[in-house]
Image (cartoon, rainbow, N blue to C red; front, side, top):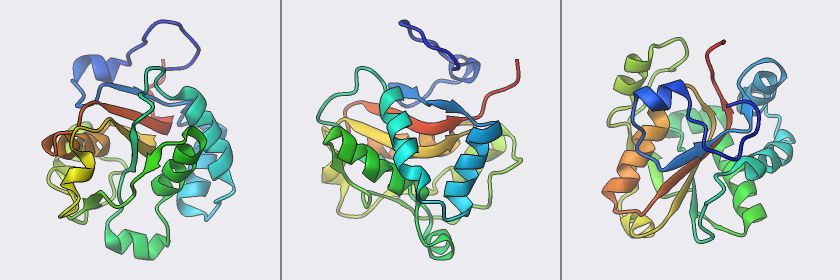
Length: 189
C-alpha cells in the first residue's frame, strides 16, 4: 500500500482472499516509472536496476522478518529461463540475501509445468494456470523443513504465483513465509 504506517495495512485483495504467507510487502506500485523499471529488468536485460530495487525491497521488507530466513526466488520454467537467459527474481533475491546476510537458495523451487503468460488474465484464471506448476526440486525438501522463508518476486498482481510457491513450501514443512516483491499491482482508487 502507498504511504507509511506504524500499523499493518492490508490490501483489499488480501482481505477478501486468504494468503498462504504470513506477511508481504512491496516498496512500489506497479505503475508509471516503477512499471518501466520492472519491465526493463524483466525483459530488457537492465541488470543495473537490481541494486536499486534490492535496496528498496530491503527497506520495505516485513519488519518482523527473522534473521534466519532462507531467501527463495520465484522460479522460471526452464524454457523461459533459456529464452530470457536469467531469472529476474533470482537476481533480486541474491542481492537481498547479500544485503541482509541471509542464506540464498535459488534451486529449491522449480516451475515443473510451463505456463502461459498471465498478462491480462483474471484472478481466477491466474490461479488456475499456476495450480500444480510449482514444486520443490526433488531432494531439496530438507532445505525448507523448519525454516522461515523469504519468498522474492518482481511483481505481484493477483498473488497466484506467490501462493503456488508458498503452498509447496508449506508442504515441505517450512515455518513462516514472508514475501517481498519489487512492485504490487493495485487498483486505482
